[in-house]
Amino acid sequence: MDREQVCLLKEIMEVSFVLDETSLYLDTHPNDERALRLHNNYAQKYSEIVSLYEAKYGPLQNHNMSQYPWAYINGPWPWEFDYRLC
Amino acid sequence: MWIYEKKLQYPVKVDTCNPTLAAMLLEQFGGADGELSAGIRYLTQRWTMPTDRAKGLLTDIGTEELAHWEIIGTLAWKLVKDASEEEIKGTPFEAHYVNHGKSPFPHNAAGAPWTANYIQSKGDPIADLHEDMAAEQKARATYEYLIQISDDPGVIDTLRFLRQREIVHFQRFGEALMIVQEDLDSRKFY
Ligand SMILES: [Fe+2]
Image 1 (cartoon, helix red, strand yellow):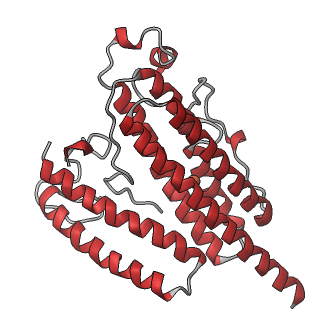
Image 2: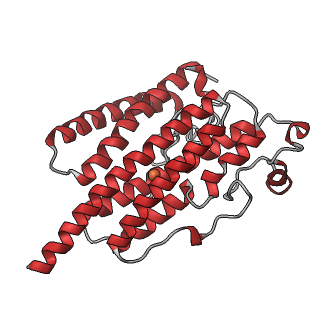
Image 3: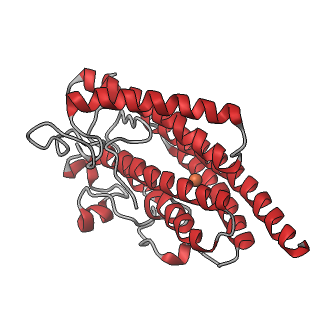
């Protein structure tokens, strides 16, 4: 397993978790401008880091673009990663 | 619709091979107060929710619960994937093994299969949001029992994360309840 891939995926997971948290909060506080700014900042960061990951390791979602051959299916799948490597 | 994203919500680390612990964790995979119940409950309740804020919240928490379900399945899998038949024999996982091998399955720790009887969707937003708040507390309590009986540091770390999420969800559902209550009250007056 590629240690670099584990590190990059964990970074994505971290940024993504911020978005999980901000979106739940915004669902019940849609007028909180500060929280919304935080959410938008991380949404931007998220799309940047995902593009970086996908260029190297293939699509995270099956709707995204892939190099040839179709790389979406490439392991490791999320439950197969050894997250201790990073 | 849903789109799968090839990642877990939390980096699941497992340090030991432990079929007994895997069997106990299945309580949150297919038990009454587990993640499958949570996800199906919240996603089912959306159709009769009266306010947009609560619709959004049920959608997002329901979706997150399915990600938690995936985390529990991953914990259980990692705890048994390297187990030999000798290591499985005599453990509470043995009964699971003779039916499902090493695949997780949505039944509880005692082997009772998941059933929709575990959840409710009442078509009444006040009743539903109260059910949801209770469900989050019951899930939190289950996680605390599981943390008490776990001896794998990686598993404990992940269970702590999941326990914390139940507390956040409880908080958000409480806010949604107030929002829905205000909405219903204002409709009565005007
Ligand atoms: Fe929850």
